[in-house]
Image 1 (cartoon, rainbow, N blue to C red):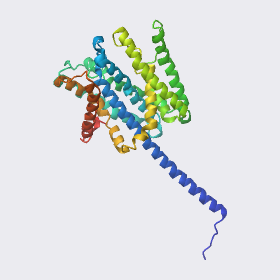
Image 2 (tube, rainbow, N blue to C red; image 1 turned 45 degrees about the vertical axis):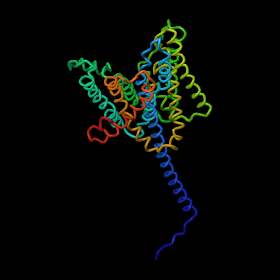
Image 3 (cartoon, rainbow, N blue to C red; image 1 turned 30 degrees about the horizontal axis):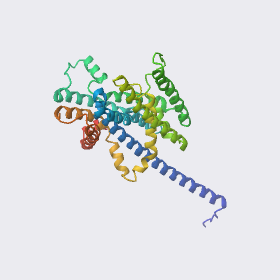
Image 4 (cartoon, rainbow, N blue to C red; image 1 turned 120 degrees about the horizontal axis):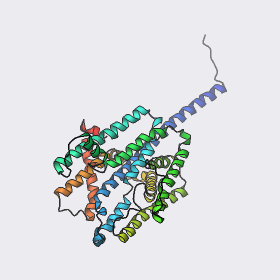
Length: 380
């Protein structure tokens, strides 16, 4: 004979609680996936902006060829372009801080270093070799040297193949330091990183900047060789801290002011001394740090508007191709200068629109190279 058990109120309550927990787990998983995709999308767009900026900075190289008697013809517009797109490399470092300082929640140290080696170190070494051979045997703009250990060392660490590889050493330095920072307790990360950011901002940026501005004879001895880590801290803070509207307005205002200081200040001092003045320039200089952080926050907050016009998947796909233009654009510029001497490299068409076309050309090449089985590993 089967026993029949009546469902009591207690069992009903426990079933309801279980259902609520299941629903909460499902919702939390959906939120994580949704958050993850949003993170990927705005980071992808930030990388696209950064690589376009880097390419345009280099097609705008006429900025560094200052001639006082001709400055009105090209240099004033070159100074504006240089200042506006100056955040290219800093945004790449900000992306590192926003995406990697929580890597320990997803995988361990071995996988972390494996990814960095396969995605950054190996491609950088291979591209150094490829571009060295290209400059020596095709462009013939680089002197062939004996392949001794000393010469290879000096070529590689002296960034003699192309100075763009200096940026990758900045990234590598950040990658090596991140494991020391990632294991900070999650609940304390924003506070500790904010303290580190403010300390570095004061000691490595504000004080040296004010000394150069008001009294260059003074010396500042508190320099740290890993100053670029300030962008890693900033990237994480911008990604994880919810700024109130008033603070966002203040940051955007300071960013615009920093851009104007960089642009107008460089113009005034350069025309005054009749040579390029570097007081307001440098990736670790105060105007650049504030401007770059403000731009990164703006990209994070308003990328969703772009997705109303362009499909998210397309942005993510283009974002995955940015390493190609980073490596390729300088040899393409050099090739143009060698074989197409009729182009006016001081003209706005090349300095701005030429940079956009070169970047698009590099993205297309990268897209097809990534389909080739072996070559795709050097374009991660």
